[in-house]
Length: 349
Image 1 (cartoon, rainbow, N blue to C red):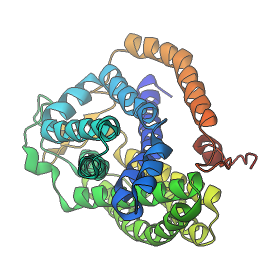
Image 2 (cartoon, helix red, strand yellow):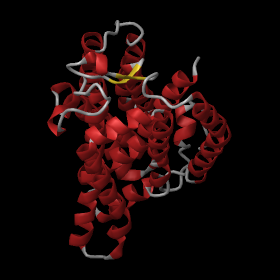
Image 3 (tube, rainbow, N blue to C red):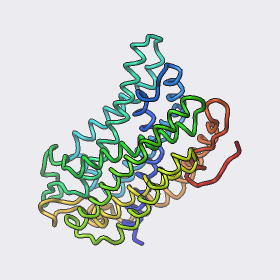
Image 4 (spheres, rainbow, N blue to C red):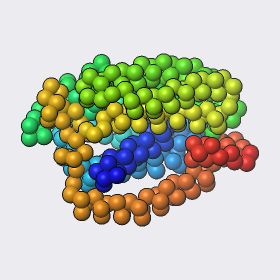
């Protein structure tokens, strides 16, 4: 395996970690209007993600930094061409961060309602735009022969890319509902369980449409065969079906593992369908960016690999410890950590 392939895979891992962990954060935010029947419920929902949401966003920062250092041409073309979309994502993230802090600055119901809705808007808008942006890498955008972006903002909004954004929102909402059912107790837990039961089939259907379309786009636009992209699609399908039955059975631990697995499979499908390119050019396919023509020198990649080998385990241990500390169900029962659940390791109750 070359260093270019290694770092392409590592960036895929970073995006996977970001979507699995930040995904339930976004899901909880999206469900605030539906499940937060009282101020106490909304406070509990905020409390369920309050200690971990900022740590989850570290994965996005590291993914962006890794892309900048390992594939500077990809980073430059992506950020120049997708500038408005990425700016909107940044603004929504800022609004969402402010909602956590400013919501508690006053007791006024109107004040708290405004910032609750700001969190919901940010939580829905960010995954929608991320789905559109990442799907556009595969669907293709105009790239000039000098590797610069040659299109405009409208080139991002294909039917395929919009479906990707919607599928991601539904999947995160189901993931967040399962997380809430896992972390809370009482009536809020019951409502979260019912929401997960309703959202899981919708996420499965829309997600299946997106994944099948991904295989077709990869074949038609990126000159890829159905194999090996079909493998993570099968994993996603199995995980989605499992999530439907597990949410109905109120098996919250296993349901969380199933929705997390589905998210992993979706991200892997996208990156497998994209490889060996990192950004497809359409209509001039020859101008596409690949892991070879967009990467840094071998020396840079070697230094990055050494640094990552030292620091990445530290980051993982720190975040795992954070989840361990805040593992208790809100209400007193130990629910286990998301890290444990993804790894399918039961904890004490």
